[in-house]
Length: 142
Image 1 (cartoon, rainbow, N blue to C red):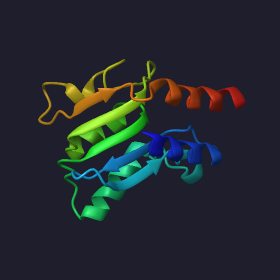
Image 2 (cartoon, rainbow, N blue to C red; image 1 turned 180 degrees about the vertical axis):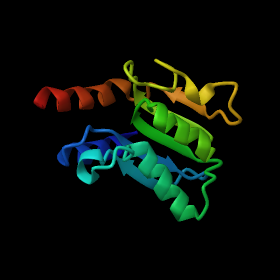
Image 3 (cartoon, rainbow, N blue to C red; image 1 turned 60 degrees about the vertical axis):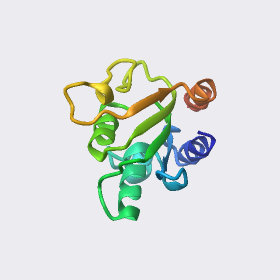
Image 4 (cartoon, rainbow, N blue to C red; image 1 turned 60 degrees about the horizontal axis):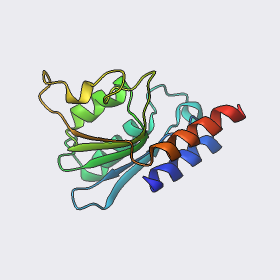
């Protein structure tokens, strides 16, 4: 999670909301990283999770990320939760809860919806206070 928080800090330097993600390979090594790049790229889909998944899939040479774990500083939104399900990651670990747009247990629980064919394990609240403070500090400074 600390590496994801470092990615989030880089996003803030670029003027983006500080969200960072790290995709771990099945053996626990870092496969890819991502940070919010919406402001940097002008791409509304450039969320940290989506970028980490894209980079990890490119590195593996396939879209299935079976056995992988995505660690992210903020609970995934609906778009990112959908990408997690579609990519077949085994688990998602997140820090801060997103009560306004979270789709991994707070507002919605898309990733564990029994109607879907794949449901990753969810581990919530890892360094949650520190991740939430990183976001709060960014918005205070705006």
